[in-house]
Amino acid sequence: MPAITWWKWKSKIKKIRSLIWKQRGSISNLCCKGDHRMEHVNVCIIGAGNLASKRIYPYIASAGGRLVGVCDLDFEKAGLKALLYGGRAYSDYKEMLSKEHPDCVIVCIGPEQHYQIAKEILKLGIPVYTEKPSAPSAEMALKLARQSEESGVLCTTAFKKRYSVAYNRAKQWINQFDPSQLVSLSVDYASGPYSNQSPRTEFLLDFAIHCIDVTGYLFGEAQEVFSFAKGMEGYAVSVKYRSGAVGAFNFTCARSFGVPTEEVEISVKGGNFMSIHNSSCWKITENEKPVEWREPPTFISNGDSGNETGHFAEIVDYFQAVRERRSTRSNIYESYKSLVLYEAIKRSAESGQVVPVQYESVTKI
Image 1 (spheres, rainbow, N blue to C red):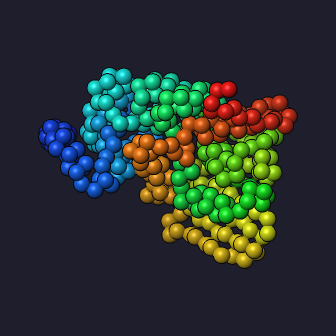
Image 2: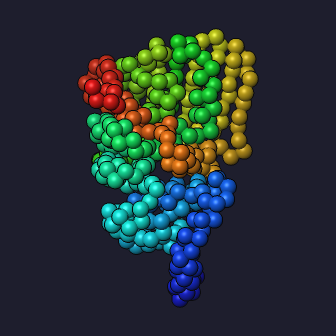
Image 3: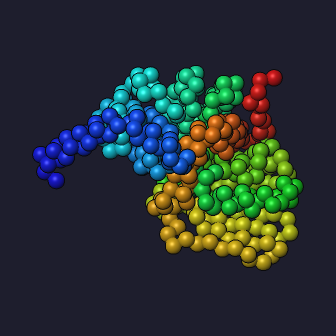
């Protein structure tokens, strides 16, 4: 498209958006007077990078939100997102929050910033959702969890697998058994190369943390862990859970982002087991007989609608939690526990010792 045409369209879009903003009050009244399901929460987003562009902004309206503010240190990036999805652009998030008074905030930048900004947003009494990881350390995540608990303000983390179709089916299936019946959990999870030069580019913290988290969602708290590692590129992990079950994880960044590897096997006493492939396909056997099979037509998770991977579903649940003033299945304390297990895996690999996994209470004693 010639540049002159693009700028003409950009000008028209701005005029249309200006008219819409003038009608915000009317639109809000219409939403609130109608079906409750039509109510939208006003949301501000901090961060306009690649992940947010693909997995957050496109879902906001469909998930039940209305974007009122966009902030990025790169003002042009923020401006483009505001142009495409609504709201006003800012380069200072404090200014944005003071002017827009959002119902909730989404932060998608880096683990160090997630912690610092979430802490300040909670002080303002505003619910906050951060991308994973919520902080670069379990200690920092626990501080956020306690701040959230004491203030009664929601802080949640984008651990998508807790919201995916496959792992929710797995959770539902596991719940029919007594925890003492759980026997073993194996995970093979891989990505393409990571540079491993900072928390944001560390394979175990940025990528493997997803399956570290979902194993806790499925099997509960770990008791102790032992791991071998090849540098920061590969981990062989053995876990003992408090239920008595055991786990074996293979994590590596020596494969491919384009050809996913995600194989999960769950075994329960009595010939009961479930296999999950690539967050999308599963088969269930009960009493040594196949009872359920699912293989969607398109099962490469990178191309799903947002429900298969959980990217869309987690935002839907966050907005509903804000409206209903409740917690979420990926609240900050659950995020803290996942970081505790992550740190135990690293300590064991570095020391060559079995490491006990110890969780502190969200309530100070």
